Image 1 (cartoon, rainbow, N blue to C red):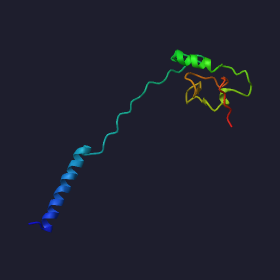
Image 2: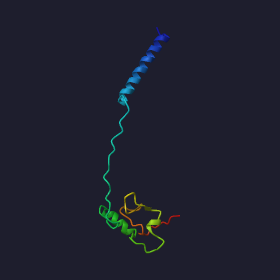
Image 3: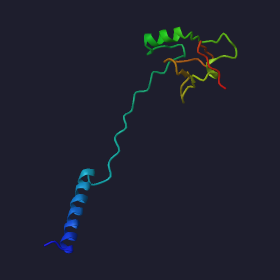
Length: 116
């Protein structure tokens, strides 16, 4: 015979089973954060002319885009270009969103896009 008392007892038992399963599933405690993997630091060039670690394809791309280390146009330089990536903390050279490798702040390429 189904009574309210049996229903409540059955529901409480099922809740206990569900709760116990949840504890087992989570490992009975707060999860440990995954160990952070430290990536090796990228090659820091001795100067912005050092292309060590830059693939031949990327070096060719730099040439095709007409990158030069010293701008021929006084007001058009990498330092005031939208595509220029300023050097990070402890870095001496910037970068460019078009190609890989170190970029001089006073450099220039044919895709120069002035900051507004």
